[in-house]
Image (tube, rainbow, N blue to C red; front, side, top):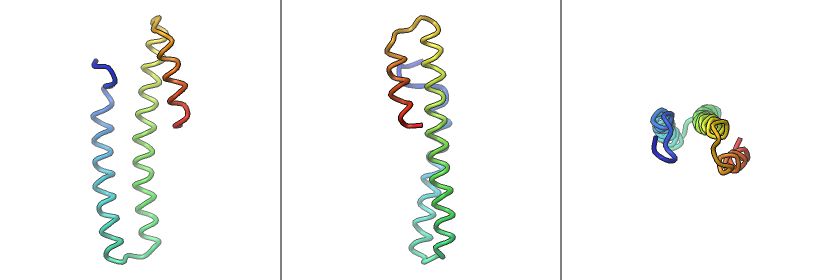
Length: 88
């Protein structure tokens, strides 16, 4: 595995590309003067998709950090874990 690349990254990228397409659709909805309730609902869906991708990235990375630390890895993994925690 390459430094900084996890097996979950392709799935996360796929999820973010879907969110990007969804966001483009929401922008079109704004241009079409759709109802605010519809806009808010769709923006919530985009926000939720991005939050889910972030959570998956962080959880996957935490798992790797804990594995590395358990296998006698450096304290750098623990420091990085602490750094990531602020994004939860």
